[in-house]
Length: 236
Image (cartoon, rainbow, N blue to C red; front, side, top):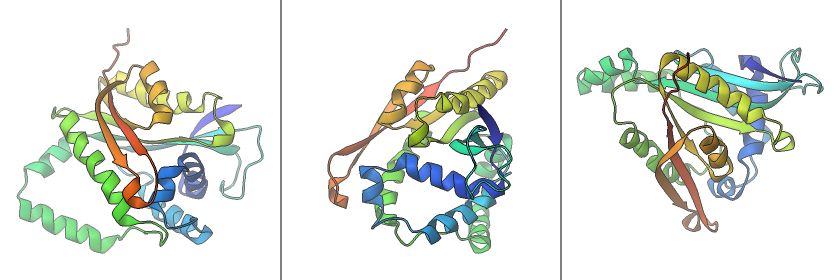
């Protein structure tokens, strides 16, 4: 049986493994100099613990209660993690207040934050390649979401390849869509070719397409990302 559970700090390693398995492919190979080591996996998992419970962020996992949990599942009481999702809220009142403050104040807070926490960077990661991909995606978000009103964003959604086609993505997507509808919020996400069709079936519409050429980074072909938006559905 598939069940939805929150991701807790004890589950971050299984979260990392599911995401890595789901995202593996030609773009992943361009973004890394080689196979991601076990120590790097654990370093990422430890780093991601800091985001659990963060304000206006929600971390979810789908577990199969009929499967034996791996050693990465914490106490393993619920079952084996087979899918994950991360949702976030944007343009909240506090965010707008920060935007209205002086640039110097923002700079000081940013420097202070950087001193407090430096994210773990796996040695296999090609940071320059990753930034060339993420830069246009990050720039597209405010271009598409021009309204100052709050909106909901799907930051991550991944299903382990061994468990695709079981409705895991739907469970993870439904949670965010239902919450957005309850609060009357627009949803935003960046879709890869794998997920684009599922999102279109659920009411998301393409607003912008970003293309990333793999060739300069030793790969072949183009990686496409679709910036998609879904209007809230009013519930009676």
